[in-house]
Image (cartoon, rainbow, N blue to C red; front, side, top):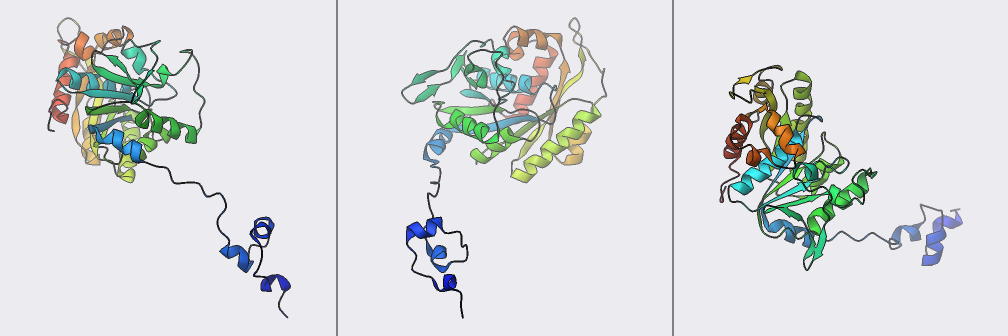
Length: 302
């Protein structure tokens, strides 16, 4: 004789909701309760469709000058006549406001959404603009990070841009993954390293991350590649020479160029200026312009 519960097929919705019998025939046909609605990407796509090129600037580890590269890539493209935005999603350690002299700036609302802060025509957005106190820590878990990054794109009036440069924190965590998931037409990633072997080893992880998520690696930049004499401009290697080039060749990705250590880079960042503008005649600025040409960031129809 079959169990009475197995024969039961006429339960009410209220009974199904409270029933603990997972194998009940009626329960299997009950409508799902409170299903989460799918997120509407219409607004997000509309924002992104007005931005022609989007690139992400990554590094395998901290302290290699990734944000300096991101700031100066964006500024170089702007000086070449491009309409450029710079999105800083290094949520826990935003340094872009300091490098561009925007500490203390706050976002304002407009008719189409929140307005990025502008400096010399460059549109900038950073977590630093949201903090009441610049020394406040950002203590957010993964889901909140994803939501904030989405808002930085979806709810901000970027307008029509030729290029959006996105500065993400070191490593392969929530922030770079969120960007790669949200921006389906991401042009690619620029990965920053230094000549040391330990930095190059971490870059391999960043390259493999890009391969896993389907993002093209535009190339590797070796920062702090020798010391540029402030008097004569001669570059003297002080770390392991050319660590980035052989690593890039080994991994099958382009090597974009080397940027020497230059005291003017640190001074410019501390003074809130991009060194490609404030120290345009320095060897480092010259090296940077070559990288910008290699990436074709100054070309309208690249």
